Structures are given as structure tokens and as C-alpha cells.
Amino acid sequence: MVEKIKIKNSKKLLNIAKKIIPTGGQTFSKGTHSFSEKFSPSHAYKGKGNKIYDVDNNKFLDFVMGAQPLILGYADPDVNKAVNNQLKLGSTFSLANKLEIDVAQLLNRLVPSSEQVRFGKNGADANTAAVKIARAYTKREHVAFCGYHGWHDWFISTTDKNLGIPKFNERLAHPFNFNDLKSLKKIFKKYKNKIACVIMEPVTVSSPKCMLKKECNLDCKKYCKINFLKEVKKICIKNKSLLIFDEVVTGFRYSLGGAQKLYGVTPDISCFAKAISNGVPLSAVVGKKKYMKLFNNVFFSFTYGGECLGLAAAKACINKLIKKKALNRIFKNGKIFKDKLNRLIKIYHLEDFFSCDGHPSRTVFTIKSNQVFKIPLVTKTFIQQELLKNGILWSGYHCITYTFNKKDIELSLAAYEKTFKKIIDIKNKNQNLKKYIRGNLLKKVFTRVADFQAASLKTNVK
View 1 (cartoon, helix red, strand yellow):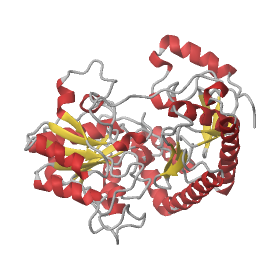
View 2 (cartoon, rainbow, N blue to C red):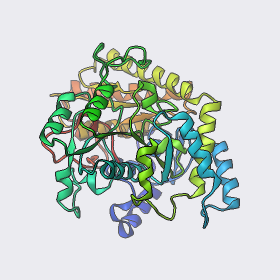
View 3 (cartoon, rainbow, N blue to C red):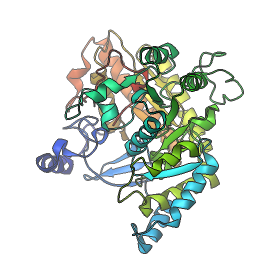
């Protein structure tokens, strides 16, 4: 444990960056919104496995993992080899490349909704392309959504980060709550025959509710004769709207076939990114032929759409996930960690304040509303600070990788235990956590401007 993280070089680079790069970086979830300025490191130097090294040579166990794409860990040797071999041949060509076929065939084999595939470079690309297809097919404009779907106008217009976006976008996008069919039915009733699609994250912090059980078991296919996702699909079919699963987070993390495979619900179109290629930029829109053929006329074309480094990475990543049965290992270690962390919370009688929730492959540390620690961002800033001092890079969730092991679990739990002891001491002294924070407070990336906040936005967004 160190009382103060070395940030001399990070501080210097951040000061330079702020002068020439708006906000000082490229992604909100990797900048001063999500890491406490004046205390946390700001710039990485390298990563290996699930460890990150910053420019001041601090080493941390990384729970953020590049905002979740690094399913195999930093600098995976098999992915690196595939990318390096392709780089020798070329990365972008004047013609299509066989890698497009190879990866598309892999997706068609693994993902239930995949009959045809188009590639992009990030999750927002894929989600927006899918929405365009739905609008083209149904000849409708309104969209019902649940979750975080990227930076494009149709979605981000519904938040307070909506500068520069024509107002009509906000009038066409309508949020509903995860596991709340009534909130979705209200949208269809209000905009009868106007909803082009429902686009949603199939799993958020919560699992889909089952009509037979309060929440789906993780091995739930044998239980879920009637579940939330299946009911959403029924509503879409009844109203002739398309169902789109945003599997940017869940795909190739919760299951090789995505959450749709895990929960037995096949959407019309699905979107993948993040874990598909272990951090090398790639996304994919997959779906049934009768919808995907509209890409012949729906414009989704750009120079790097068939860039080969991302495709080579995806081919290597997916094949390694299959060969090593990596998701089984990730799930097992993630479950051990989640169970032990919740046990630790109970031991220290902090159940009213905290919990570790979500799928074991990617859990979220929930800070509950309470009268003792009244401002969640203050509590989160303090926890981040204390975990950093104990060798953990954290921004609210735990992104488990193939390289995560027993030693990492022990290190993480020890760091949390020290943090809990400090919190209890401060609580018993009836003092404010803010007094003990060394750097700047963390900030929200955005807030919803609709009349309610979608429950799924409890998750961290970038």
C-alpha cells in the first residue's frame, strides 16, 4: 500500500494534453470524468495480461481493461501474432479481403441471429447502422431503447450532452426500463404504428426477469419459458417492429453466441464490438438476410470498414476463446470474486451501502442510496482512491479477463477490505468522506433528459 500514487509524469502529460486536446483525452471513461484528477494516473505506458503500467511506472491490477474489450488481457500473444502477421501483408487494401469472409463465417456459426454480417469499427457504428436498417425496413422513424448505445445523434440527443444535435432526434427516441414491460408498452401505445425498432442491451446489471422466477438463473434456458426478453420480442412481433440486441458489452463475454444464446432469445439484428477482437478496433452488425440485404441501399460505407488488423484480431481472439474454453474460466473466477466480495460486504455490515451485482464476467460495484454517504460520486471517488493505493485500477466495475487468477482475487479482496475498514472508521467518527479525498471528485458522463432514467443506465458508460 502506498499513501500517494506517483503521478509526476501523468500530471505533466495531462497539462500538455489539455492545451491541445479538448477534455484532455479521447474517451470520457478513460479521462478525468472517471479517474480522479490530481490523484489518479492519467496516462498508460503499457499493459500485460490484466496489469496496466502508467508513465510513472506504477503497476495496477486493471479492472477497467480499456473499457471492457480486453477479454484475453493486454498484449495477448496469439492476438498480437495474428495482427503482426497481417501487418506485414498490409492493413487496408483497395479490394476486399478474405478475412471478412472468415470472420463473418465464424459469427454465422456462433451467433443465433447471424445470417449475414457487416463490419464497422466501434459499437456506436454498429448500433446506428442497425437502427437505420430497422427504419428502412419498417418505414418508421421512432425508436424505443434501453441502455447505453453510443455517441450518435439518435441516442445521445436524449441526454444532457446534446449540444449540436437537431431537436427532432430527441423526439424520435424513447427510453424504457429494463425488466419493466409496462414502460415499453406505454411507448408502443403512445406511438402506435410508429416504432421502427426496440434496441436494447439484453443484460444490464440485472438479468432478465422470469415470469416463473424473480430473476433468471445464470444457467437459465431450462427455466425461462417466459422471460423479459421473450416478452419484449412478442411485443415487437405484435407491433411489426424489429428487435435489436446491443451486444457490444455482452457479446463474446457472457457467451460465445452472446446473451441471446445464453437466454434463448433470437433478435432480428445484433451488434457486437469490444470483446470480439480483444481491443483492436472492430464491430459487427449481424442479422437475418431479409433485413441485412437492405445494406445494398442503406449507406454504411467507409474507408476502414474492411480494415484487416481488427479482422485478424477477431479471428484469433474468437478461436482462442473457443479453444481454451476461456469464458468458462472467466465465469468461474468472476463468480468466486463476486461471492467473496459480497461476503466481505456482509462481514463488515455494509449491505445497506454496497453490493457487487451483475454477471460474474463483468460485475458492477453498486453504491446504494443512503443517509450516511449521501453523494454517490463522493463515495465512488473515495473507493477509487483507496483501491488505487492498494494496487487496483477501478472505475466502478470489474472486467474479468482470461488472465485473472486466484492471486488477483486475493489482492482485490484485500484492497477492498482495507477500504471498507477505512469507511467504517470514518462512518463511526461521523465524518464526511469528502474530507479524505486527495484529488478531484469524479463526474457523471451524462444524465438522462427524459422524464425517467432507464434502469439499465446504472452501468458505467463511456
